[in-house]
Length: 116
Image (tube, rainbow, N blue to C red):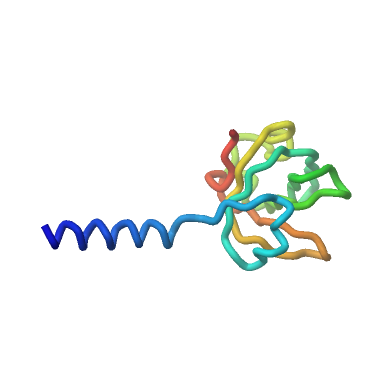
């Protein structure tokens, strides 16, 4: 019985340490360098030659967070991410970073974005 308890305890601790922190879009600045999950509506998008941008928390230029998908990773998606997610409520998991005074999460895999 003790062995089972220890195994269950270690398993739950391992799971808890790998789970992501769910935060609000407006709080992204407090989590730079950390892996988080953020759920919000897509307010605007833009497909450029080398990158696709998805804006959360407001439309550009008043977005609170931008999801950036580089050209090399766009081919992993079933269609262009900028049009695919526009108008949807999505959850993104990734590392928050800062770019030119704005906050972003760079997405490299489709599984990082879940439509709600």
